[in-house]
Image (cartoon, one colour):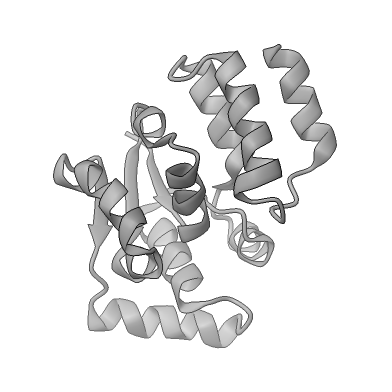
Length: 167
């Protein structure tokens, strides 16, 4: 099964959009790190707890060796947070897909040949696998861009293209 590693921003937005049940229906092995989980508010962590309990979301506790590797990455890329570096490190270690909307992290991951995707890819997967309807996807994409995370900066043309395709 393909591994995907979730960064905090993706998890936060999925919690706020109330899309976690649909997201975790996708056929992936979902992972994140304890550093990322600690970045979330208590209510967001609580929303993720059922998926951790069912082992749909694996949370890796960073060992001392992992933290050394994370800090080495941070030294190379000081603009990345420790959490971002932990997500990158985990995706690279597990040979998985990194899910993030952080542009600095996306560029770094691509430069290191780590497959990386964001919100639109997730919406595409949920519509393709029918975990959400096209109409629901349009509604939630609008909510994401207008209310939940208006500073996200998703490419307008790509959003419109999807709405036309899903409509």
